[in-house]
Each structure stands twice: as structure tokens, then as C-alpha cells.
Length: 322
Image (cartoon, rainbow, N blue to C red):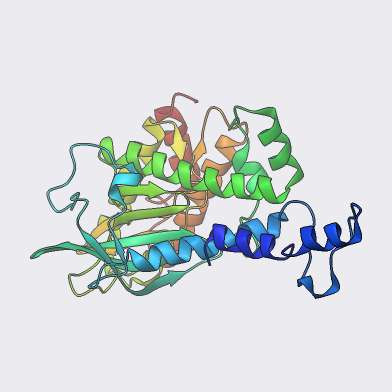
């Protein structure tokens, strides 16, 4: 139902009211009993939202491509850093098609998406943050320290965890992750290329095989001695790259690292922490290192190689905080 149709139904409730008043010879606020349902004043916020959703649903249905779920949203989104990879499809006439879910999580779900135009196509990971009714960002107050909002109203809303504030927090996570991925990609860190951000949806390079099989998490790997040492060296190089940029992952574990063709790839960075601006930055860095060192130790990496205290000291030195 379109909004003006709803307004016409609202107006029709008063049909015949003028004739009734003239027959009585006086003005009245009473509507004839058979005039239909009555309503006073403006539409409620709930009704406005319902009408808006109906209109959006009708528009999206009318504008859906025959061979996909939607047209490319590239033109309306924040776009990834240049130069764009050769595999990226940026034509606005491209079509997006959903291929299924890859992973569910506390804060977001990840879907497999194909973007195609003509004979060209590419697989993308669509990370979508859940609505505030289901969102379970843990310990968000600690992560948000050091981040500043431009408006005091927004700052108060976040502090009080109002519905508006929770939506702002979700937006902050998406913006922070997209910015971190863009920054890290540009300095050569092993992260997925951030294709675009639209609201709280991120489209990312798909890390996996051409048939849509996602690369396994490090937690699923069973490396031999040589492979374990190679993965450790890749990890240290990655952590040093982040430290040079003044950041740490914030929630690093063997579940936030993928292994694709022997290459370690860091993922899930909505809670990226600024080591300087966040007063708890060194604390988060220490926790990241000890968490991941624990996994490598459980797989047989000698303590003298994977000593967490020594690695933390090295990273703080690289970050200029020693």
C-alpha cells in the first residue's frame, strides 16, 4: 500500500460529515455513526514506519532483476581503497545473487554473494550486523573508549544504551571495521579486501575456493611442525604490521584467522583498538597475544619461540610505546 493510498483511506472516514452538519444546521465535531472508522491527528510513528516499509518492499520488488536478488549497490556505498583489484566488478548494471549463509555469529551473519555482469562474476562475503534486538556486542564500553562522537546527543545515547544509541554503536562497529580493513589492506596486511560498506552491511573479498567453500579457521587446522612454524612467522609479521599502524585486533583468537592455501588471513575486526587513543590499548594487545600464543603452544610450538611476554614487548616497541 502506498502512503497516499493510506492517506485517502484516512480522509474517506470523514465522507458525509459536511452534509450531516448542514442538515443539523450547526457545526459539530461528531462524525456520523456509519461514516466508517475514525482517526484523529497525525499518523503514529509505528504507522509511519509500517507505511514506509510497505513502500520500500513494493519498490524493491518492482526493481528486482530477473536473474538475481538485487542490482549492485556499489554506486550507493562507501567504496574500498584504490587501486581496486582486477577481480572487482564495479559496473552499476551488475546483479547480486545470494548463494547461502557462510557463518553465523554473536554480532553479525556472513552470507555468500555472487556479483555478476555478462560472463564476469566474482564471489563476495556479505557481512551483515544484526538488528539491535539481537545484537550482543560484548564488553563494547571498553572497545569504544577513545572513540568520540561529533554530537553530544549521540554520546549520551550511546552511554545510556537507548535504542538510538545501540543503533549508533552498530554503525560504529561497521564503520570501524571498514576503516580498519581499508587501512590494513593499503599497508599490505593479510586481510580481505573491503569492497564496500552500505549501512551495517560490509561486502568483503571472499576467502575460499571458487566453488564457494570458505577457507577453514586456524582453529580447525592441524599443521605439522614445519607448517606450524610457518603460520607462526606469518602471525608475528601480521601483528607487527598492525602495531606499526598503532592498532591491535581487540578480540584475536584462532577463530579470527583463516588459512587459505597456506596463507594466514586476519578477519573480524569490528572491535579494532587504537593502542594510543584507547587507555586500555596495551591491555587489549596483551590479551590478543596471550590468546593466540596459547593456541600455538597447544599445537606444540616451543615456549622459547612463542613466548607471549617477549612478543608483547616487541610489539609495544614497534608501536613506539615501550
